[in-house]
Length: 248
Ligand SMILES: C[S@@+](CC[C@H](N)C(=O)[O-])C[C@H]1O[C@@H](n2cnc3c(N)ncnc32)[C@H](O)[C@@H]1O
Image 1 (cartoon, rainbow, N blue to C red):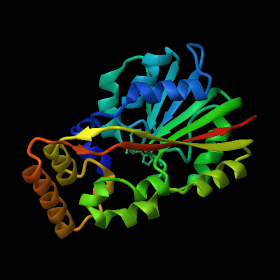
Image 2: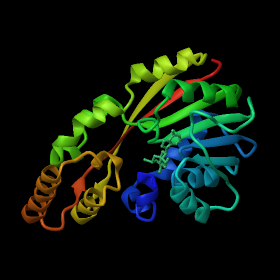
Image 3: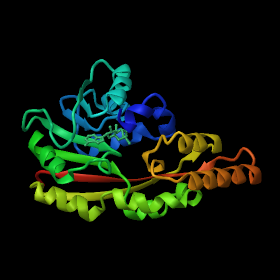
Image 4: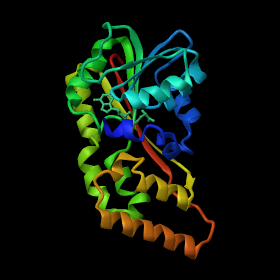
């Protein structure tokens, strides 16, 4: 059973407070989407963003993920989306049919990133756009969650592709341009919520943490609670949208 399938039932708890409507609007604007568009959500997970984009655009949506457990949760959210099990490296889809391939917090899990960029280029139409919701290395270095769990930052810097990596993948895949838009959205999370995310490893960043690193981080969060009772932790949504266009 994959790590994502194990946590699928609790996964959405760890994504509370994300500005899904805002991100869906940004993707719609950047990829010029409307009701007539065909959108692929690559690594859709439990379908939070797939559903969000469906609400904003009324477009035709496909959601793809290799984890059957995550897809099971996604299917509960919409019967209109075409959900299916696959990996980004080998899309079981015809060439040239999509207007946008969207992907949120997925590329650090992909093994063959160049192969996936090539596949995105293949399934997109001539004027198609890839929009990837990720965290840049600069943003990772500033993430508040690492003030509490410093041990896991190095691993995140290793696994997340850098902006230069993305530029190379899409240039090699034949795209005309790749740009990076950095965002910082104010967000607050309760201490108990963050402890649950860490202990249940609802964010994959917690997977490599040692028992000691986890305990120390939880203690730092409890310390915050003792010093400022009831006050949530400011843990902003620091996100970069990578926008790769096939034609200018
Ligand atoms: C952190 S979750 C993000 C889910 C969803 N996009 C969201 O933002 O809520 C990462 C997802 O990527 C999927 N994934 C892992 N490897 C993948 C691959 N090679 N191709 C496509 N999806 C992959 C996982 O199964 C998981 O559902």
